[in-house]
Image 1: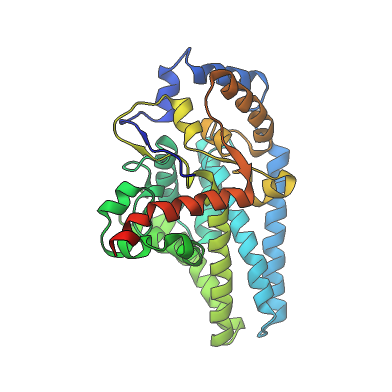
Image 2: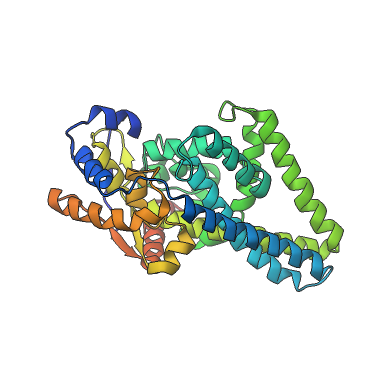
Length: 352
């Protein structure tokens, strides 16, 4: 069943609203979370996790060099797609200051991980993601649901023209094929953003991005023949995009969309628009803790290993308040998202 649309007027950022809402429902949950010690840093966890990702990246590069001009490199492409997905999750945690409490080391780590290793602008992505956190699923303010190619509500579908109108008719079927382009799309938008205000250090970020692609493409076309290099590129970037989409799409797609009109407090705005994904240790590792999306949106700087315990506290507290709290399995979350996408595209199919 498609979730109902929620109407809401312009709202302050989470940081501003936390200051405003002392004594609110959110401040009581925040007190319980703090009393449980769930906001303290976990340096050992991140040392082990990031160290494992670094070793996997080094192993993938070593295997690439050792195999030479061989079709076996496609297996390396698959492995490196997973490693790149984990690097994206690492950049996400650094941007939210889950790893370091101070800005400088968080930013330095984010620039190295996102720009140099992934080929994605840290400044551009952080600007975009901050706006998403402030107004999740808001049709006008959340860049993650802007109708650039896909449409996320029937209202967007009714106003769609050009590519969104064409793609929106069959967007549920096209969603995963389109995700194969997501990695390249992130890099394209990163270079595009260097001339805008979202990137505060365009020279530094641009240099790191160029360095990434010089090494990336230089390595591909030096070690591999042109045909094998293009095949490696397609497999690596395609699976990397699908991985990212599989992590981020279940979090909000198919949950209530927010329009101008009705005011929601911070807790309800974050809880009602987010979906948690169950699945245990494997899902936790695959999604980097973002399967606890409700808790992550309520406490963005909370370290990943604390999210599981925070989930139990948050779900119980929402039950006390009578606030709907949605949690489901990984496959079910994708079914809900795809069902929603098909439903909102129905007016476009009916009009054709």
